[in-house]
Amino acid sequence: MMRAERKFINDLIIKHEISEYMKNSLARAGFSRVEIQKTPVITRITPYVTSPGRVIGRGGETIDALTSGMKKAFGLENPQISVAEVENPKLEPRLMAKNIANSLERGINPRRVIHSAIREIMENGALGAEIIVKGKLAAKGARAKKLKVRLGYLPKSGDVIKLVNEAKIAAYPKYGAIGVTVRIVGPNAKFPDREVKKVELPKNIVFARREYRREQH
Image 1 (cartoon, helix red, strand yellow):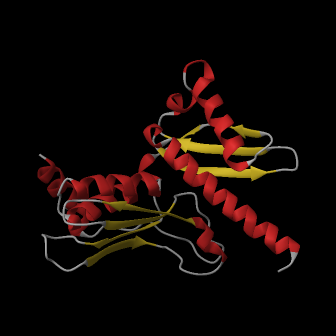
Image 2: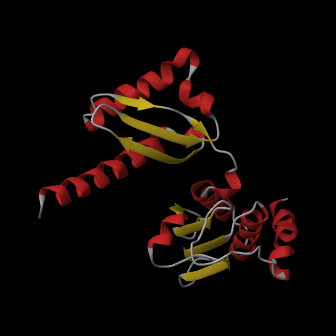
Image 3: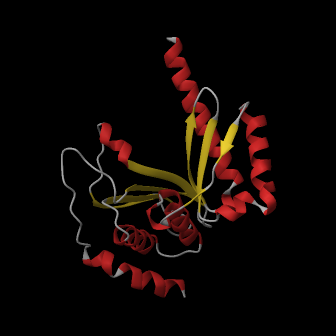
């Protein structure tokens, strides 16, 4: 393997590990994702969260501790952490996946959960979205099942798949683990080969929110 290829792979591994570290450290702050930019001088790390104040802490002590932890964990000489607030949680795959997982753990009907979630995503301007839940979706003894709902445009191949944001997490209801995957194409995504138009929501998706709210109470 060439030196440049090895460095590229190592950088990807470190970025993944930093993302996992941030996910665990900033869970209470509503962590969604992190952007990392490496330069010869510094490493810029920008976590996106719903509650920036929880990351910064009183007098900046929390973010100082986070910076020190990053230095020790990854050997970064000069990490600079700049916290950004999530603009719209309904367009953040990780946050939506977490909401879905919480609903599944409360025993709400899986089909209603994912239909309600994808409605929220599309109503907030997404050009495309896909939600997949897979695992023990019913009572004890039932076989594992897979439910999938997809609306709008989501490319599956080519360079444009970089415009698809994705998150995967696990829910743990009493019947067994359920994998939750959420993919979203944001409203500002630009595709060179096509114009993506707003999707009209199917009736079963439109009414899902009402049924979902009824089941919550």
